[in-house]
Length: 109
Image (cartoon, rainbow, N blue to C red):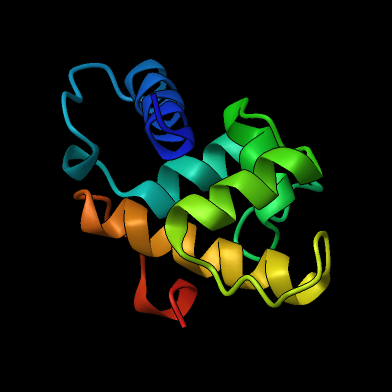
């Protein structure tokens, strides 16, 4: 199983617990549901680490590096750097959107 598949499964698990009857990721407004899930102090919109922690995924640097490789993030970024984390956040949100998730364009740029 890929790291992204695991993340996607975790997202679906959270969505199904928040929105009974939601069968697909496109059945919900992810921004609204993630905001409910995040609570105070979780900056899921701007921090890939916070996002991964929020959904219960492994947020370690090693896992982020592996996910970045899986999603084709530029390998020239230094592991754990703010630049790499930001590129990973955008790539992850784009992949979620490509799989039916309603992610605002402002979070993809």
